Image 1 (cartoon, rainbow, N blue to C red):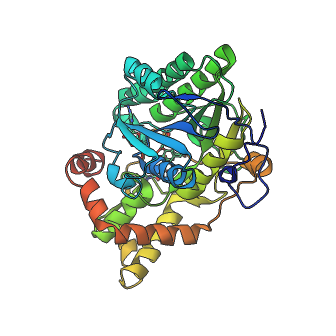
Image 2: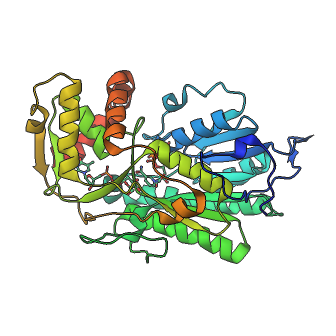
Image 3: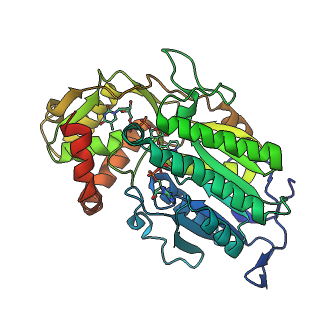
Length: 386
Ligand code: NAD
Ligand code: DAU
């Protein structure tokens, strides 16, 4: 472990890179010998919000990798998120459902992946409250199917890596003070977070039992372009744009720690290449906002962008029935990834929010496409009958 392949593309940050832990070696590839640095990497859920940023980063930054994206294109998956990379020679999309165990084994045998970055999931807490079973199938069974497929083809674990992307919600809910650390005890409280916690445990169990080379990261709330407008920030932008009420759960006092999605993708890149096998990293923005304060800030930014008199959008704020079991506060201590791997968030929140709002306003066609059809039904059930 730790031998550098001497390729400039392995360097991922401005600061001196930590030791490279993901060693390369000659690998059979579709009957041909691959060059030393050519790797085939599976990214699952690459048509979703965070996944599309990770696919874009890897396809553009690592032309010597073949990036294969498995995505089932649920309501949250959208190939329009990847238009700028879809014709790149080192990118391939496969429409595949990770809950199909035999299919995963067949595809792993076909592609002989060297590494897996697993993001595919059902990701929205409110949907998990309304319909937990989708979360059990995709987040738990889907993850085990990928672990089994990797175990099947990786007779020799050296040089392989299974990277599982998880969430800070597995740690439960904080009071007014304190932070989540990597060794904070798990205490998931929604069907979504319980399904993610379960998948984290299974990933660690496969490492412990079968020596599968895994790493895990647990990240706080992401925001930025291409996020589906069921989540707080794009939903609020969309509603303000269309003069619709802004639904604030409870009193709006719940706190989240927000991180710009490209900073998460940069952390994933670092962890994938440099983390020690078996490690866990927390990723967060050190950027806590009460929901109501964040919504007021968004209202201000939107009024300015839309050239509406200041205060116009705030009139849309409406307090609605709280989310069942609503976690009060999440806050991440990310010292480990900062100290070990030299990562830190690159954007101030105001700057990130401004960029995000500009993106959504410049991409109304994208928004129109994702909010047509089933979105209206979801919105009706979730909000109009609340
Ligand atoms: P998302 O809902 O935007 O995207 C999920 C993607 O997975 C979609 O493209 C969807 O089509 C795909 N998918 C769902 N079920 C599938 C299945 N059975 N087979 C194949 N593909 C399937 O999610 P996101 O917000 O981008 O989150 C990505 C990952 O990051 C998730 O694992 C999530 O738990 C984790 N995470 C998200 C956040 C956040 O703030 N969004 C924070 C921390 C961790
Ligand atoms: O912490 C990481 C998690 O962040 C990820 O694992 C999840 O995939 C992601 O969805 C997100 O979960 P949250 O539940 O925190 O995000 P959401 O955008 O749904 O809600 C953010 C906060 O805003 C939360 O306190 C609930 C509140 N909210 C949300 C919506 C959609 C509202 O007040 N009104 C709303 O309409």
